[in-house]
Image (tube, rainbow, N blue to C red):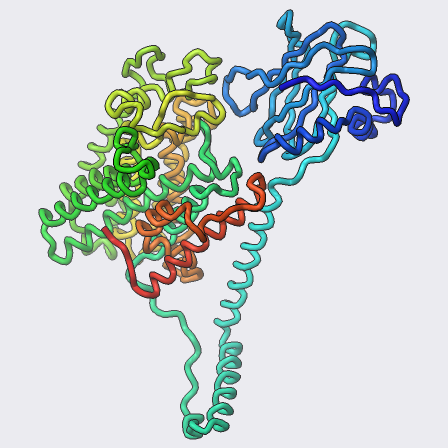
Length: 631
């Protein structure tokens, strides 16, 4: 970006303008904003600043020293700093050179100023810029006249609170939940219920008496009984509620999540909200596999016929994922050359097939006496699945062997990094290590995801697919852990304490495994939590969360009936339809419309919340109409 020289304003005849500040520190920001302001800079700010950006003015007062400003986010692990802007040497006293540039505001920024000629570091600072803020970085000699440079960051204009819309939306949602809960509580009170019933009956009696078609004798009909909760259904609502929660969040983040970084996938290691939902969906799918299979076989369906249904369902998921939901579908009938083969539904199809066939091959009927015999307090739900566990362990051994021992050309063996500018730029084309190499080797560069999240922070250039081949192994492990949750619910039916104890044990065990694998850190562990790789620590961490959520939902929803699961229960009952529908109609009104300000988090958030709420409403209407799309 071109440098902009700022003359001393005529209003204030001060030779030290934009130079050494000798006044009160709290007045420094206002002084710089007035004294060093420029119509050109203001115009540049309004034209070039985008969402999650702030304006930074570099004031170089060092005569004879050209500056190179390097920048990056502190969360970019072992990243090379990138050139942000260059500022020419300072001029006469009071006339520094000024370079204007936009900086990111999503995370804490690292700034390093170097002497361009000598490539010597002059100063370094870390700061969290605010969205649409205006900042000045004053570079000058230290007050004692030494040759060292001093860097002072000044806020010229305060940033906006970009997280305020999320806070408001959360509070509004919380207020609605509290209001509905309070009304339901009042409705459950017998006195309040009787009062409402009497009021309604009284008005109805008056209406009938005064109506020409009314019959006064109807006023003597017995009053309706107070509402009482119906008997709990046989279907476990907590699973549908959990599935609906994951699906609702998935729809929201897929639609953009208000363009907030924490509603997008993590660039590499670590977790954001968007990284939680897909593995939870896989987990619940595993639970449903066992419960559905048990019910189907108990009704007399043969294993061979059930195997055919499993194969057909998996095939349909693969076809829908490739043909309907494929991001390159809009390219037309000749798009096969660039069609993405892996995907969310494709992974669900493969995972479903492997886990369902595995359970079918080694299926054992649930012991009839398990609900009454005290001996069932043992590990029956685990021990009965020992053949499946052997297969799962073998699959995990294959994942570990390929990940850490497969030679990858041009990359260190066992590499788990993002490539690009990560790891000090040593392995720019090694994104994902063995996982990325296998996909590119077997599927080709043009048939995998072209815009991975690693490109955001790590500036990677190679294609990488987060739903690739190697990661599917760990999604199978995730689904099998879901199968274990389903077995707990069925083996220990009507024994709430035993179910909760086992959920707690699994939650703690998987959590401890995650701590051991990651060393309780984001980047320093043996196997970091990573959604792009679907690392085993990612699976154990999200499975621990899943068991904890079931630990809460099961007693609240199914045992005590304190919550019906509304509104998440409805999309959970029609999950495939909602997922495919939200992908297919993403760019159509009323799920998307032209925004007044495309750089506004608030407008994006409102649009994405409305679109998500519409799909929940559609799922509710379909539930009431008893319309369910099952494959």
